[in-house]
Figure 1 (cartoon, helix red, strand yellow):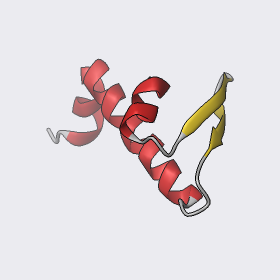
Figure 2: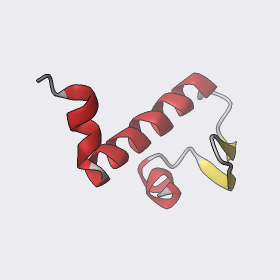
Figure 3: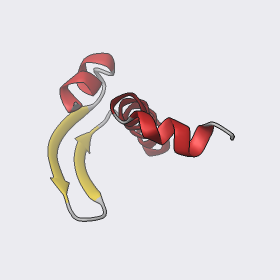
Figure 4: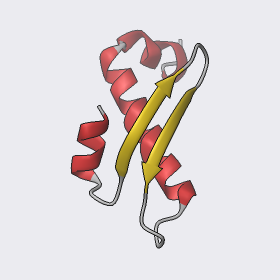
Length: 66
């Protein structure tokens, strides 16, 4: 997954990813002119779209009204 992010956003370089029970740690290199907030937004958007695509029930639970 992080290879795809690096392909789409060549200014990002992931060095380490550690997953814990309820959170994740990234070691990322970014250019000085790219804000940390922008990188977080990119990662959250990308992972959200992938999760919704992989797990269809997420869309139904949170985004479709009965």
